[in-house]
Image 1 (cartoon, rainbow, N blue to C red):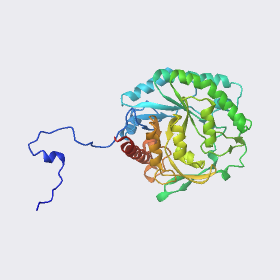
Image 2: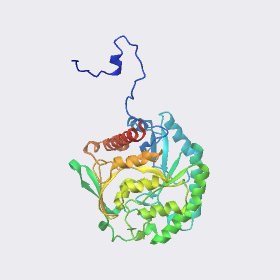
Image 3: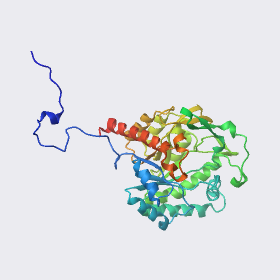
Length: 371
């Protein structure tokens, strides 16, 4: 009869006097971001602020999304110092967001583009110059919007898990609100599409030439009307129409898996359609519970909604998506209420979202790529 064999790790079987080997027989640790993987990003208010950069770096985030920006155009003299300031932290600007909203409404200069008003071509020329300058300093993605008026009037805060602040949207709260004088005349659906098409045909060739990806965020909230004007980019058919209007890998969507559920679609199916065609410029990684497509939903913690966040992440990894994933819209937590304003981009709500997103990314890389 033989004694049962007791399993021992490889180093123990080599004996106590075996030389130390820094190369393990099996992998240690977890998969990390790299050139060929998706990369996590969050907002940064001021790329010149070393203290903010350090707080973001401590979350393990090396790529930032800059949205606090001036009007067009952004010159090299504006962009280069911000790129250089982050280099010393081993960080990069991955995305800059065009100023579409301003002082509680639609930016008056962008409104010229949305409604085809006099001065439109001058504003588009400024955006073209920004694209050229971004290419010169190596910023890869320019994000933009195309709403006639953002439907934020339908939001209310509601208590969620443990009293955390959730964002609840219901179109009934705003459906009868009148147009705003500052926005100008109301506009129908096809006219908005006509002006969107004009914009795309002007800027995408410049983006291709300068290796800058244009990434438009779908309407969020995705209600069909806002303040009397029709909204576009609030359905999957609209997203397909966008891609087909100017068929270029530089004409992409900021794919928000939360908005995808808000409009009543399956995020895994929609994400596969976009990712397999290389038409995602950035991912917004968040969760919702949808009650009525486009009209009634609530935003939740990323682990507690109708979107299968792990399956969404697998879609991206499986399709070799290498750009940025933004775990946005953190919930309002008690621990963050006493923080100063300048620390809000790295509060515990953001840290929670980043940690959840990184876990989804690491396990997807392990499962699908064996890393």
